[in-house]
Length: 249
Image (cartoon, rainbow, N blue to C red; front, top):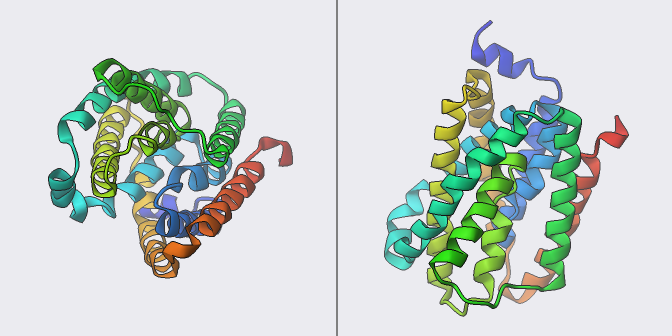
């Protein structure tokens, strides 16, 4: 059976497409939340490593055209410090993921997603120093959470949101960070032998609904309603996290 045939025979394929579309919609009108929306659902339908591969493939393609501008607007040297931490934390998270039962992964993804949504809704932001050590530790936490649950973005978002940096610098840093993290993910998964061809094909198959939903979400966005959109996203992510709990199966 070819990789495409295996991918198309995946149970719950329609739900994976729906989860990718919902993740794109959330990302389009809030600028974050792809993994928080996608991973609880995907983790309940396919193996943890397949879910990670799909997420990385889906989230790697869309931002690529923005990389040149991100280098101009962002602070690549600061992002490099974060990436240093990611490179140390990611293998440790993947090592843990390789050794825990699938049910533990599903509980972990849903639990971490709910905690991160609660923190985001609370309005808490990191307001301490931003030296090389703190940046490296933040990157390590992001890499470890990304490797073990696929939810590596929120620590960096929380780290930067209260920084006082201009919006264009923040956006550039986020773009560079996520592109770099996705590349590190692909390299680490390949080195561990978890880059399954069928999972790569599935990731490519869900790119169109993800990108379409991104465009729809961006078109729906109105700056004066940003707070409403964010709380709508929090609600969708919470539902996804609850639905992904193994208690229902």
